[in-house]
Image 1 (cartoon, rainbow, N blue to C red):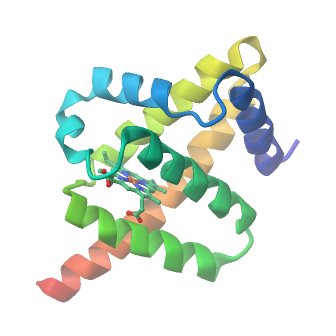
Image 2: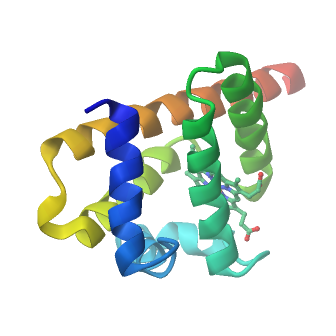
Amino acid sequence: MSDKELLYQSIAWAAEREPVITRRFYEILFERYPVVKPLFGRNSGDAQARMLQDAIVAALDHIEDGQWLSDTLGAIGVKHLTYGVTDEMYPWVGECLIATLAEHCGDRWTPEHQAAWGNVYGALTDLALAGANRARAAQA
Ligand code: HEM
């Protein structure tokens, strides 16, 4: 099974437990990394988590379109600077997102799912941070 198939499969399984992996994601994130809590609030938590999930699904739909990925994730990275998101927070969010999915998938979750999610989240993070770094360099 390809990474993409593993990702869609685990999203579908997780959706059986929680249609959008919101509530549990925030519980895990705020429990493990309470320092990020004050960053959220402009939108309701549910709306924000839906945006994160939608952004990931949109990225999966464009996984072969390097230009789209670079432009879209680069812009997200720039916007996140204005939210006060720091580079070190990216792995925290990935860890909690993957932990939520693993919990929802239960026994069906495999090391292959874990690896596929690690790969895709890592790639999206690299693109977001590249955008943020370009913006920081332009300001310096
Ligand atoms: C590659 C990883 C990520 C993706 C794809 C992503 C995606 C998004 C999207 C699509 C939005 C809403 C619209 C926008 O601002 O463009 C958003 C908002 C936000 N994200 Fe992320 N995000 C990521 C990582 C993070 C990280 C690491 C943090 C740190 C805690 C974070 C915190 C926030 C906050 C605070 C908002 C605004 C929420 C509000 O308005 O209350 N995100 N994110």
